[in-house]
Image 1 (cartoon, protein in one colour):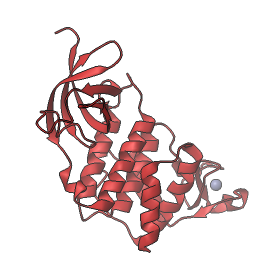
Image 2 (cartoon, helix red, strand yellow):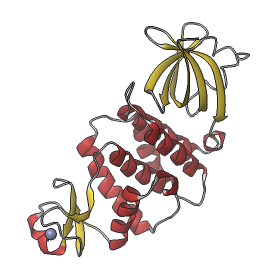
Image 3 (cartoon, rainbow, N blue to C red):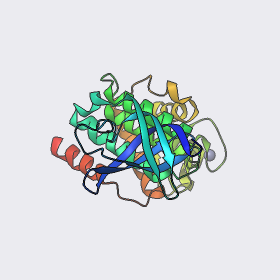
Length: 251
Ligand SMILES: [Zn+2]
């Protein structure tokens, strides 16, 4: 059929429409973020019931209508059920979906973003990497993919690559020992935090989740990413509010 396409994608959100249908927002590699209707998906017996939920990853055969797509077939390869068992991981996962939604658009190639999302959701299920670290890696790499990443390799004032001492959000980059006085607001960072950020920026996506860090590095990443987020993202993420509240309750 002329108007039928098969796309690899992940369901970012699913909302009920009418009595039995669902409206899905799917991030696809080739066509970016699209809207597709899954007819009858709310009936328990529907063959679209299981896949019409956030996190469902696989191949979607779609009929392209004038306004939106209609799901013809779904071949789900991963439901990410392992993260839905763990409430913490679920909140982080929903946050990743919201961020992906924020940064993606229709008809814009999103292959890197979908790859990052997939690997990050898998990393949430991996117990040997702390969820908080997964979050900062995901955030920094997302900024990188979208061209809004800080220069973590050289001093924003003089270009020096050695003796990096801190990070200046205003200047969008690192600051060296000699230029410390030029930055009004510098977050002092350990060398290992610099290495971590350099690794995240320069590594291919499949290699991102191959390390862990100390508590100190985790705290410094939290500071840098927090400031960076408020500089570049002017949206309040619902999942992030839950996540922050939960973290407060815990501590
Ligand atoms: Zn300098």
